[in-house]
Length: 124
Image (cartoon, rainbow, N blue to C red; front, side, top):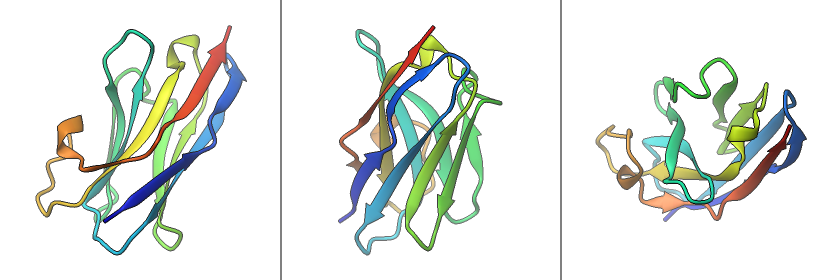
């Protein structure tokens, strides 16, 4: 079992920054973790992926160069540093964890644990 608790959402002006955190608890090994987001009326989309073993990261084109996913293994915490925010970044952000042994992490259905979400609102 893995419990995920996000924090750090809020409001920001366009061009500003926010940092999201996702604290993981439980003893199950996590293969990869990701941030997803969902805006009203839109489908959920993947934002960034981190493979916990290698530290390899991947980003959606829409956030590449602006967002950084990282982890603190000792604290079992995942982060998403969001810089140069745009109004189109406004969404509910969710962290997700995959505990299966195979490192297939590209889609939301690959993840078996989800946080409750944290709202990010960017105004122009």
